[in-house]
Amino acid sequence: MKLVLICITVCILSAVGASQLEFESSSSSFNEIKKEVEAPKSEVAKLKSKSKMEIEFEALKSEVAMLKTKVQRYGHHHGNRCKSGTAQLGYSGKRNKSRVQYIPFHGPFYRTPALVVGMTSLDTYRKKNVRIRTTVHHLSRHGFVLKITSWANSITYNVVYTWMACPK
Image 1: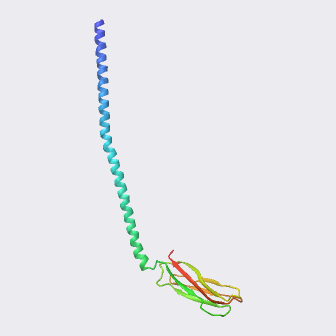
Image 2 (image 1 turned 30 degrees about the horizontal axis):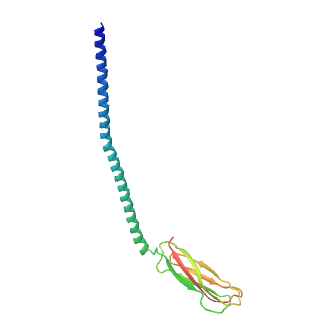
Image 3 (image 1 turned 90 degrees about the vertical axis):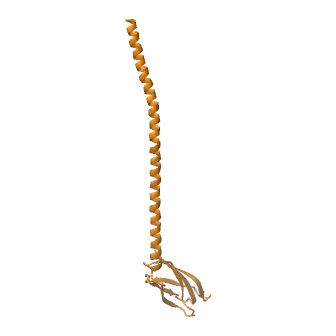
């Protein structure tokens, strides 16, 4: 009976030991296989992300090219560049002088532009108050009206303004 029990124990141990050996060897080979399978997956992921970046880059290049074409087409032909010039009251020794002047743009803008007007020169009689008012009227794509006025006892010989119009 002892012999049978020993024989059964040896069989069980050998069976368990053999399966553990098989399991360990299969788990190490499983890990190796897993590494072999995961390596190409990560390479594929890198390739996918690279190709995604390349696609995005190509889309951006295409958009830049389209914008350049629009700038070339509309910027030059439709007058969408800044334009500037000068306007002046004109020399005179009269009091309460006023001048209204239409200033055309050299070529129309695509839309009504933004306009800036600034005084660059002022010549007045030194013993009188200096009073100057400048207003812009009827700003359009084609030009604007500039009104320069002095009032009260102000004697203004000349006023020079510089203007600049740019697309909005």
